[in-house]
Image (cartoon, rainbow, N blue to C red; front, side, top):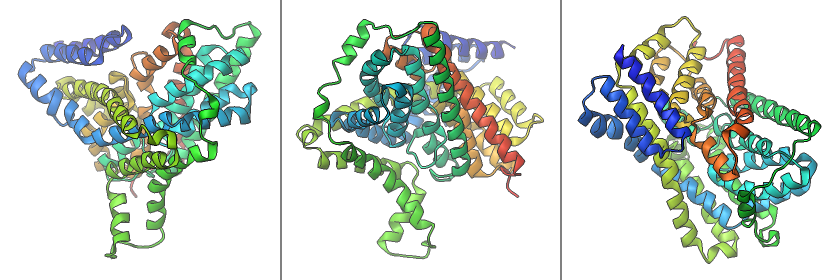
Length: 464
């Protein structure tokens, strides 16, 4: 009884501390201590084994995915430094116009994140540009936050096949699938998320206009607007897209070629490269991101002069997101050692639910506990994923449904990405969280459940 109360207290405290802005490393360690003390766990074992180096240890995760975080952050940095990301944003803004400000925000963020630019870079890049659009359109800031979250933090993160996102890579590396697993159901879910999300923010804008709510400038906006620079310094839009095409093309092309013939018996260098790309869900996307970064250096002379600096800053930028995610996974690694978690796992695996609904429930609960979709997905894949494979769930369907489910209840108020977005935009949970909840929690949950319903209606998801 005390152990279960300690689990609840640890999770509740983690949410509270995150909302209070307490450093996530400190919060995760304090909450792990609460769980350990109330569950009779050895302190030395908790902090020297379970938290750092266990199967779900913080540094176990950080070591495995360090290269991907590093390469993704470097690519995001060179796209920002070369102003290629700004060029893409400005071009879409000119094409769609101020009247479609919300659509501009969603489309640009979706394009950049699907192309391999990390979420925090996208939000930081888009917000200074968004200030001008919001001012001209008299758009409430909370709705810009919601629209950009639809593009950067939902379907491109978890649903669309082929993306080098950490969620796609976690599923592929855990299940032995590839980045395109469950592609068609992912596209279905992505269309639902984009459609419902944009319907919501557009309808809320109409209501805001009717009651006279509009853009309210603050000191943060004036500081961020200074980062825009001269639009004439940005490269032309079609050239700015080339690095992203290189990233996605180098991921997709080997898959397309492998599908044309059986290369398993071939011994040439092309065959070895193709087979390597299919068997390395962490290494290959990392290589693709570096190829995109080098393409930026070749194409943009302004970047060439400070390429080493940009690569170095990108490497520095990778550390905090990696360690933040690792910290919540380390907390989860302690939680999974408790009797209460074992009881939950036993219950969820034996409850009278269709397997895919059971997957949805278990991933959602774990992601909600740690406030991180990637953290929740990693914990699920390590602790519960193998059981669903043994039950006969198709690995490709499990890959996609688990990834989509992880992107729902992760975005509760203590989610690091939500907190960072509000800090960048200078707004509070009270002002904007309701809209964020709808587009990043409610809509992804609806899309995931609709995808499961479609799969069940077609008799899919289980190995025949």
